[in-house]
Image 1 (spheres, rainbow, N blue to C red):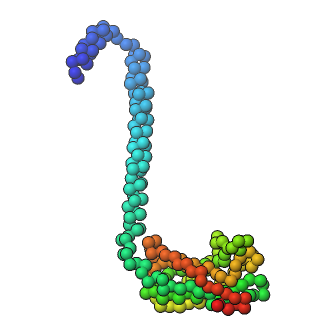
Image 2 (cartoon, rainbow, N blue to C red):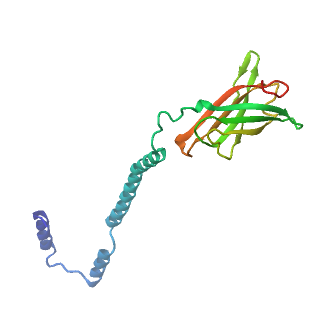
Image 3 (tube, rainbow, N blue to C red):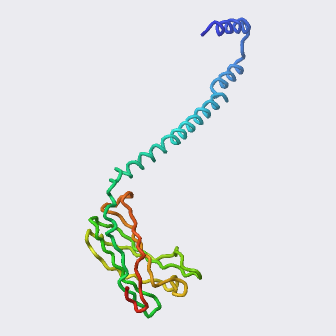
Length: 211
């Protein structure tokens, strides 16, 4: 207790000297003492509010750090500069075109993995350019087929792909030249190992043979 508090205490004692309370008054005073004050309740509420705000601030600051840490773990080591060397030896070709009775067309697609890498979970897509009055334009629509097995280094596989006549009508698209795409993983199923290949040099004549 500092000097100011002691002074106030002395003055209060002098003012109440000789004053006494009735039994009823004493009981009322005791009830008031036992009852928690508004200040105490407000202080408790304030403490709880501060705790919640502190927890929210902690999450706000730590979540970006955790996300960055997870991202760094997922990204792994950077790929070597020669990681994609030799990928030009991956070839996509249309071997044959066959008209089916239901109006659809079946294409025999060859994937020749001439690289030294294994290709995993590959997806092959086919599309045809759109015919225009003054030429052709790229087609945003394509049909895709997943290859369930790995395509090992040096392996060659053939995929039958049936196109939807409703999507690729000959009056609207140039079916004499197919555009082929392949997306997959090289060696390991890691995000940084995803690659894509594109080829559109296949020319098909009206008899269903590749020229």
